[in-house]
Image 1 (cartoon, rainbow, N blue to C red):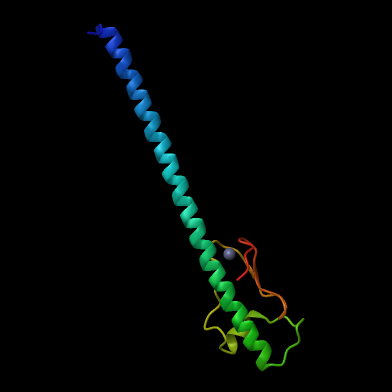
Image 2 (image 1 turned 135 degrees about the vertical axis):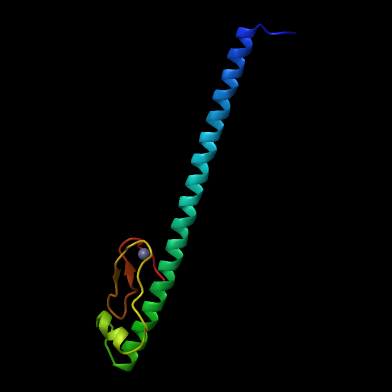
Length: 113
Ligand SMILES: [Zn+2]
């Protein structure tokens, strides 16, 4: 079966449109996967940072005989070498150290250690 040149052109352009749509959809899917990986990476780093803060806070509270409702300042934890440097959320969240009895929190991720 032979197609006339006009039908062949229509078929070819239809195929081209389909291939273009497939490419665009694949690209969008890849970008979404990449964003999800980056987000998960940020959450994991943030969660690890919160664990470091929680440990430093526990040491500070023990050594200075602090009560459960005492809240350390960043400088107190760093100055006393419980942490070598203050950790920062990779996605720009702010850490709230909170009271000794409470877990520190991130304003961006809202995760717990
Ligand atoms: Zn965070």
